[in-house]
Image 1: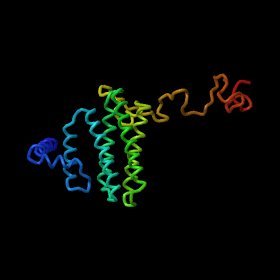
Image 2 (image 1 turned 120 degrees about the vertical axis):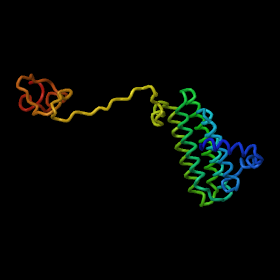
Image 3 (image 1 turned 180 degrees about the vertical axis):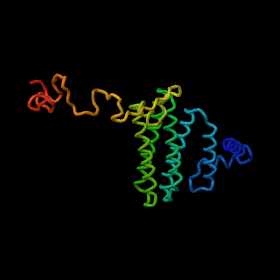
Image 4 (image 1 turned 60 degrees about the vertical axis):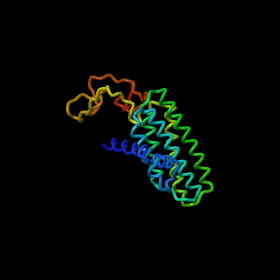
Length: 230
């Protein structure tokens, strides 16, 4: 129902006589009155996008817009609302998750796309922060941290796609059988221990002394209290 409502409202905005307003909202900043319309239209586009690759492309674009908005506000000396940095982080996290759903060639291309976007926006952030007022410093640093972490994730995925999929939790095929739970036996329950380890005093009347991994002078039950052959 939420998705249906979003679609209907988006259509109403586009074709119900307020299309010009929706178009004007595209260039708004978080401090502008039309900014909520801009965010609504973005959410509607995401709701209508079901293809992972198309959704990833859109998320990368939106993340770049959030970073550009923060830089623009800082350049004007205006405070940056916390929800802008929050949406930036959400866009990037979801973009990484969608990338992990793609096959290997598409995954590598998507990670390079994310890496390039974060690298570009980091340069913009750093240049902006050099001359921005103190009140915007914390928000920009938070955004830089988010972008840096995402870039690191993308670079790691490019170097090791398998580990990247493991971290995102999407590498296991749906048809793979469940792994049985293994409970180790309790000591002393009568179950033989592997490799001869288990309870006991370590003595054996019928055993022939053998060399130990510790060498001829290692600890053991050999002659003179030393392990190994005489």
